[in-house]
Length: 503
Image (cartoon, rainbow, N blue to C red; front, side, top):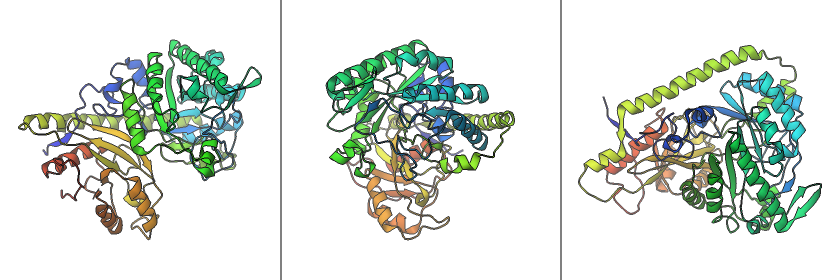
């Protein structure tokens, strides 16, 4: 049997990411009780490994907001933007429940229903809680989540727990009011508008109080933070330390989205977002304090499907209006699908434990020599944790870092669609050039197939295309390619570009 190589996954119960990989997987969760690990096992937003296999859904029932953020501009009836606060339809609770049931029946791998806007769900408590009340009764197999800015959170913790909401996300961008005053121009508090530093003081106090109350009630709390260069970049290290100390389970540092066409204050004022390198460095710095989420897609408030895709157009109100779903039958089908997914995940883990040895262990057996440098690799995938997508069909690439000790997930990079054909890529030179720029820093691209034209341009840019690991588990393939690069002497240099490697 061929001996393959992967990062050492020892001490990684439940599978997840290998070794010191991404935020919510692997040994990062080993300290958690089994009951908590079970809660996130099929939650694509709380577990990096789960997002390869399971889908999520957001329903937009909460139009109002009680604070103003410089990075936010809510847009309605908009199908051309994919970012928080954007929706095509604002739903009533009854409409939302009907849509959730239709989606859950059509997409059985959908495990999570979240309310995240387009305003703040807890600034619309009646609409939000009524939606959750109905779903906990009619669709008890779906996990319920809510995302909030935290201003109204302390007063609604009891109601949240009453409706079996076991996962809550709080957006916390600062713990210093002076920093907060640069992010939030105002809040609406006790029936009046409060501005400046005082507004930030109130918001921060409510966020921290709500976090503590949720943790005390056994609710899993994820903290979102928007990385804003020059405003809170360095400060987010302190945010991570504070929220971890108060019991937050996961920290998601995500990049500022601030393009002028979005109409946000930051966008119109020219505030830039972070580079990929800045985001990764900040996430690494915060990871010393708590588990980091690196697979966030900053979804629309009405997103449907796997992370990185949006099937919302398939389930508009007019398309589901006449549907009658037998949800008891749908639940039985969903249970079968989930069981099959778990069997596949278990088989992948068992295969890795039987046929793979660690990169680190092989490296240690060799004579003393400088440790090979790490390498970034981009992966085209449609899900399932496999390399299963044509390069030209990818709208995003997952980025992994391979080193002598492990393979870890770094994040994702969105790109424009280069090819729309099923078999070959057409004329897309300008889009391909943009894709190559987005992949800057990556030395290898792993995909299931790739056309001749993009192959040549990627090689010319110092990025090695690789279609030799199609349908293999991502981390296994990344580790194998890294070992091939080391054997070819490509990792002993301080820099340089990758070269095409034969199987």
